Image 1: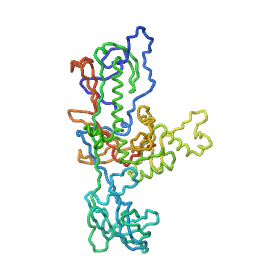
Image 2: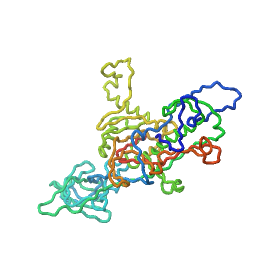
Image 3: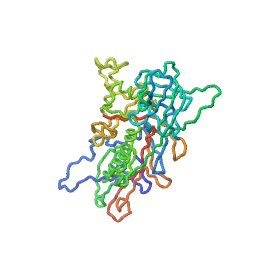
Image 4: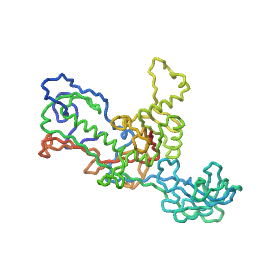
Length: 493
């Protein structure tokens, strides 16, 4: 994430097209103490290519200011009510039965939950089921289902029981095993009342989920003493951001800046909250919720190897159907996962088993063969993008873990929904459109902490201390907001 420099003092490391010693093109990696003058190449060789990693959040998100050290937002709960762990002790063929809801009171779609088993009580503590509502009662063992109408609701402590009269003359299709068990799944499909009766008793309040995150302060610095700055040397370079020309003396400052830019993104991906009793919490640090942590705790987790068959992706699609059903999604993958998707799609070609298919039009055997795919459609649109962060050997490239645990190091890909979602912003006090993934940084009318850089010392144009040095300081304060995490999928080995 490249940022704008502070207006005063002006400082930017820019190569010069000519060998002119400016304050903006210093480097510091020369040794002139050798008695022999070496035969040198003045152009630096880029043996690692483009070494920067930042790009992910720029592609899928946005940056927005915030004037608080706590970001809070509300996400919608489910509109309809469904319970998947409901028990009964009624016998088979009974015309009426008493059921008890045993679903746990869970948050917004924890890992492994295909359909959320809702809290039996709404946000105000009212029962989620009411007299007069009609329900579908499906046996969890697949033996059949009933339709019925709720005739009574009994709330005792935190236990919710309700009586149902069945519409079928044959009564309950399968005997229950006990009120505390998970015999059936129940969901509401309507209501029915007799003529001249009172209306529905009670009302249901919206069941919102409140999430929050805290920005963290990131810092870095580069230091060079004034004496070393008096020696001029030249290197012709091509920087990762595309600039070319000559730098003198302060090349290390340039790379410090690039490294800090990468940390601004990787910190938003990897950050975790400091748990109570942890060493970080004891030291007064709070941590933050990064992308991997948010998706690992509030989103969907695929583990046990990359999905490399259509049946695997069908399972992912089935999960997405039960969440936000976002039409377009981008899968950011490491190299092996990218190859697995290519092989899966190539196998769908009828010629895949017997040889390469050259396709239509003017393709022939002398043309370069593209063995990769950029995306596919199966129920939804999936676009594939290589994620350099997962391949880089100095970061997550090559990490493994057994067994796979969210954020343990075995991450091979991340599915991110495209577009934006509507949430209630508690700072603005109204609904707002926000990208599913975006960064909030601290800023006010007098202080912008998105990307600060300044120079201290007594060299390089600074005159703030009596220390014979130039110190370049970097600072940012930010956090990432993962909204609708139930629409993300984290892939692990």
